[in-house]
View 1 (cartoon, one colour):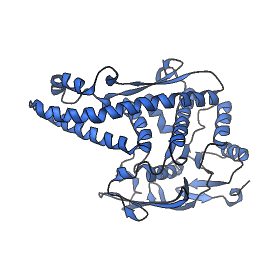
View 2: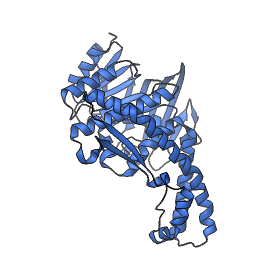
View 3: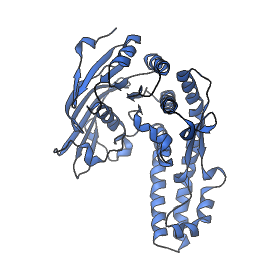
View 4: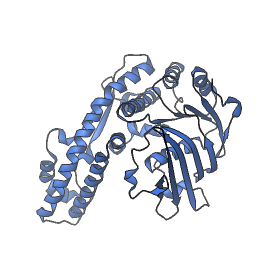
Length: 370
């Protein structure tokens, strides 16, 4: 899959941009706060119908403007795909594929596979379990529409059960109906998450050891109440306690992903460089898994990935992303040093851009095929 052109109107600090991209490597440099991350976030938005940084919709539209528009022209398995999105303040956003509006935004998820590596990924290590569950769910949803449907239905039943609990409803027949639904959809969610972690872990280890040039072992362990007991049984057992708490305390919405380095929780023992390497390796493993199972190579977005890494790890990452096995890549940095090293190591077409005050300027002298 290739993003050929991107049009932006009033997305965060980018008031207007019309950018044509290389099918292989696209590099953006500029000082912090100039709009590099916002550009990548706009590309992410066209794939997932939301900001990677979880920016509220009202803050996506440029200050003092009423409308934001994103439009991407893609080449997908030999055919053209046009994706259009408009966001109005205090109004429902609109998504169109080839000029036809989606009935449900969930129908769009998975069409344009994408992996983003960002400083915000530190929340996967330091944040709560919600972030780690979302990470797993996002990967599976790109591959399996049924999984996304299961998530939506599970969360609907969960919300309805929580309403009953808050209202102190005692009619257990109402609980039984919802708990049957949660069991049905929760079982699929649990099994698919377990399968994903099993497939992801060896790829993850391989990338981490390549980047570090060491035998340090990283690990992923899926922690779930369902590993010992069926969900229907758990929910039935916890009804009285949940009525007291006012919410559902058992289920796949409480699961977690344990992340380890040499057998220890990385959030406790990892240095800044180890944490950064951990996250980059994890995202490259995600890319490899999606590439293996999908119909097309995902787009890879690398935002400010070289910060806090020593020279040897930077060198290994440059070798990885400039080699075979990757499709279209978008990469940002605050200066040209590492970007020029990547371009020098490549045998492919590339484009180089400078981003300043929300304006994206191609550097024509560097925009060539080597």
